[in-house]
Amino acid sequence: MNIKVAPSLLSADFSRLASDIHQVEKAGADLLHVDIMDGHFVPNITIGPVVVKDIRRVTALPLETHLMIENPQKFIGPFIKAGSSMITVHVETVTAETFGAIRKETSASGVKLGISLNPPTPIDAITPYLEAADFVLVMSVNPGFGGQDFIPGAADKIRGLRGRFSKDIAVDGGINDRTARLVIEAGASILAAGSYIFRSDDYGKAIRSLRCATQ
Ligand code: DX5
Ligand code: ZN
Image (cartoon, rainbow, N blue to C red; front, side, top):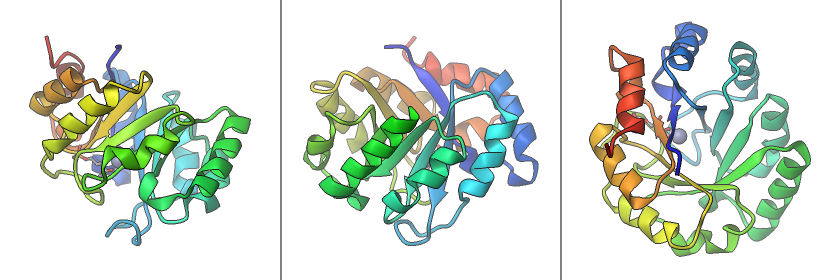
């Protein structure tokens, strides 16, 4: 599968966000990963639809909006309207009913829908949602902060999932050139990476080292 790299804006400098976005865009990013945190589902707060709307104006890259929020169904409309190309909700925050409603809303707007699971959540928890999902996002850290260490169990989860899911499997948390290799070999096709890219002094080199980690 074609490997796509998604710089996570959580590690960008928000005082010069447009400039950081332009730099990763020029450096070969395939899409942008935008972390939305509500201080309830995760112990941190980030940005909302107002900022996503402005990000949409300054880049042509697809935006993957990673919703780490409770009651995501309440905010699907605003994040679609803000210009998300892909929206990820956490299995820990939905029911069959709310996920169904979210699926309808995203499909009607041509937005791709992903289902994510935290490190302690078993793959079985997402099984009921796999058929309706366009992609899966496997968390390889406990969500809330950038710069944490990759949790190795995530690679086994990806491998287990790859056996029964043929669409994109994204992975998020602690991705660097070494862990990228592990997750690509396990079957991941989208790598979200924050600190590894934004803390490097050559974004192009960092992005290429992830995309080509197995070569
Ligand atoms: C963590 C976020 C990640 C984060 C990854 O809660 O969902 O997207 O930005 O950051 P790194 O790549 O630094 O682990
Ligand atoms: Zn994320």
